[in-house]
Image (cartoon, rainbow, N blue to C red; front, side, top):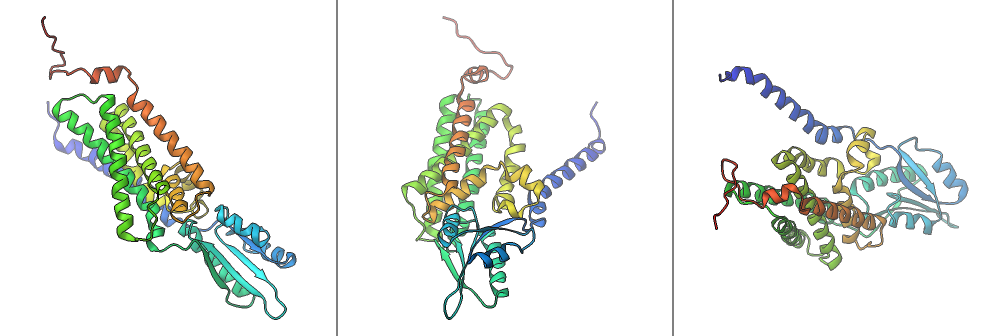
Length: 333
């Protein structure tokens, strides 16, 4: 007996509400709760001045007292988001706020505002110095490339699954490997084209393009593995993850609510690709997040390929052309 549509209406309403909860949590919730909490900054000044500055700022800033050289190295290593340099002279004290274009723009903005306010409170407007200056495109490109790599690889994996389902053809290990590598090559070319279009000064060097290729193939392999294990049900996990990119991965952890920091930011793959690529684009290949990104993305690629290509039972079944009634046709010799 067919159930009337009215019985299914409450179920549909609940499903819609659940989707709204997920979207609200992944996107607007993270943005609505942004607040600085322990933003790392450094101060390079005479000891008595530095200690007095570090003792203030509440919980919004986490000060590190260092020499000018040490403070700038911390900024190069992206362990702080800005440096306040105070150099007393015989006639005038020179105060400089130092930031870096290789650091996440959200963290840089908060640090620059806080350090400028501190310097102004000391008696004057500070000089502004930017290491590895980045234009608008340079600030946007790393996260944009990561999001494009994820959604492009996802559509490629979904297209392969749907085409195989419609044609009744099996998806073997070779097809999955070709889909992963093909998506990596084409998405890298797309990203390189956008970089050239957005800002011709963005470097399209071997390390930049290689990192983009690694991110794209890692995402494609991870998605191929989940699509193999779960089929189209994997889209319930993979599609919402795309929303994490701008809402969470685009922030620094010190600006996120602790719940978002622990539940989303701590593991999202977008932050590893975005921050590693940011360092490469701004000419800081030795930054720790490049090495971290290589390890994490490499592990995702290896793990995804193992699951996607492993010749298990499901792979053998996929290699057999099943008829509509589930019976395998056997030829008579």
